[in-house]
Every structure is written in structure tokens, then in C-alpha cells.
Length: 136
Image (cartoon, rainbow, N blue to C red; front, side):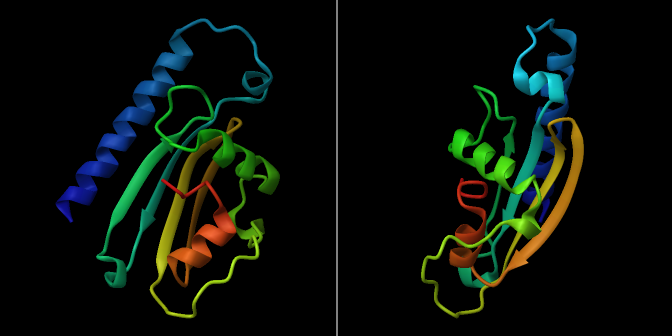
């Protein structure tokens, strides 16, 4: 448990350090900056079936962020309006075993605050609905 708390604190520090740097440095206006910045902390908590694994990353939709599939994750969010409830499954076949996976997303999407938590029945269903967003 203390390892998870440490990981979240580290992510918060990274997020605030990034936000402070972005505000302090003068930047050329880009299409995404005219709408506001993106800085989201994404986390996935797997069930006992998957070893209680916990993963987290920061998504900024800019070069150098921590998400390994940044472009696809940002495209997924844009198509869903950053709303986990509207993300539709991609049609893959998943088993019916129950091994709940809780995903969380909080921070800012294009300058708007976001705070969402959703539980999927297993990791296959989670990936079918969220695509690259929580695939890290």
C-alpha cells in the first residue's frame, strides 16, 4: 500500500512540475495550446486475479510525456470527449471471467478539469473500451 501511495505522490509531483514549467516558459501558440493544456494522471488497479498490480502514468499529448502510446491515447480521448462512459468497445472477443480492473483519470484535458473512475469486469474488456488510453 505504501508503494502505491509513493507512486501517486511521485506522479503528482511530476504533474505539478510539468505544469509549472509549461506556465513559466514562453511558448508559441499551437492549436492545442489555444484550447488549454492537457495533463492527465492515468492509473490502473488490477484485481487479485492479476496480482493486485497497480500502474500509473502521465499523459500530456505532447512529446516527452510518459505514456508509451501517446498519439493513440490522445486520439481515443479526443474521439470520446475525454469521457470514459462514452467509449465504445472495439469488438474484440473477451472471456467472461470476473477480475475487475479499476481505471482512473484525473487532471486537465484541453484546459478542462477531468476526474473519472470506472471499473471494468476484466482487463480484456477494459482494453476493448479504452484502447490505447490505459494500455501502458
